[in-house]
Image (cartoon, rainbow, N blue to C red; front, side, top):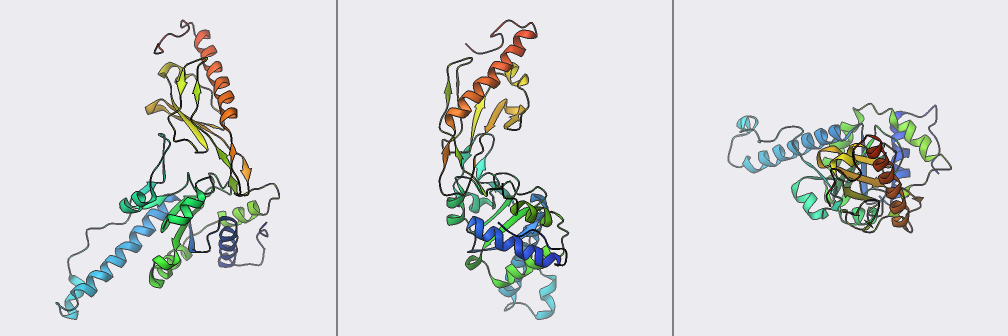
Length: 291
């Protein structure tokens, strides 16, 4: 495990130690790593960075056609901070894995649902640039987002400018992350996988997620959805009446653990509780549900 934060070390030294630890645990040696406090800040920084890169390209492109004195007043690039799209690698609540080429074609890969999961190795093998929260499958801490650029795909100038941006940020969660990595109970990966899942009772139901993800997704009748109990492994998507049921098994990333049977029993329990609430409300059993 990584050593905890040292009282005498500087902020930059702590960030460097965290970068080294993350590179080791998550096989990120081919990437340059940067930190931001949120996905939004990462989006803005990357937008600013690529805006400046595009402006530099344009000045170089026009340099042979305009006097030097006029280069600073060339038409502005139609790009504003924050307009780069973060494209989820795993689309929620549908539970579908988007091809990384598609993510990269439309923006920057947002990998919070794949980083440190069973999709991790595919992510680091194919992604050129991705951002991810560190509180989802990695279970390191909130308020800290990792930005990873594949070193040989980006210029030294781009990486240096992003490092300068990062140095201007206050990141108190760095110490929390180092403490977490030093916890002997912590494991870096969520090894859970879930196959397609079907139930015949207490309600006929088929999962809609792509098999092999660390969760299952279901569309529920609205009355039952409204009565589902909250729980740590339950994510509700009210507009779609969609239930996401998460599985979590900590591991080293060397093997996966199939949690389909466990989630099937867990779902039966949740649905049974919800239908009891339905009956207790005075509504006839099955009322409001499709036959």
